[in-house]
Amino acid sequence: MELFTLDNLLTLAMLTLLQAVLGFDNLLYISLESKRAPAEHQAFVRRIGIALAMILRIGLLFLLVNVIDMFQAPWFGVHWSGVVEGEFNFHAIIVLFGGAFIMYTATKEIWHMMQIQDLGHENRKPKSVANVILWIVLMNLVFSFDSILSAIALTDVFWVMAAAIFIGAALMIWLSDGVASFLEKNRMYEVLGLFILLVVGIMLLSEGGHLAHLTLFGNAITPMTKTTFYFVIAVLVLTDIVQSRYRKKLMAQRAAEGAAV
Image (cartoon, rainbow, N blue to C red; front, top):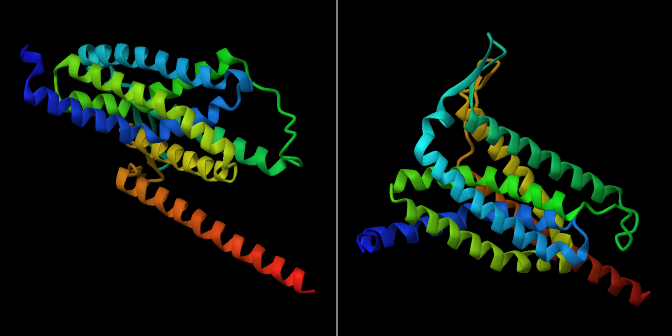
């Protein structure tokens, strides 16, 4: 019963809130990636992907709690004086890979959208269910590092951290269909979502470079703060809203002018 102390319950609430805040970009990626699966399997892909990722997250949490030094110790270094220098550990490599992959995915999807001639008939072969689930699970683990390390810094009670991960995953499963449905019904926001993912990739690359103490041409890589990230996202959303309303006014004005003629 000592586990159910007020301190542990407050910590659980804080960690659950942290999971929700840090899970926004992850949920966006899951919603966009699941669209690559056959339409009839997309909801299943999202749910099973998040569920498997939750199990692996708890396993990763257990591993990090016991062998955290292995993830922080340098694996190899690059020392090209005056050009590029850094010491890479497992954590930095995972975050750098995740950032590069998300930027690649977002850029590829943006390019694909620019090439589509008929939005109602996209000639792109869907990915297999297993392939999409695999990438959702892998990228979920990439996104999980920050939240797991933050949890370890806040408490040493394993069940509290595991419970926060479970609750966070349940919330993501509950919200994933709604987010995917919104993007499907409002396809104009897909572009906004992809550019948000692009910013997420940049944030992860800067975080990975900072973890590796990377310097390029004598300039140290500094991480993008969460405050900066959410400010950029707010600007992107505000710009999209203003542009959409302005476009509607222009279309209404042109329609009125056409009717008058």
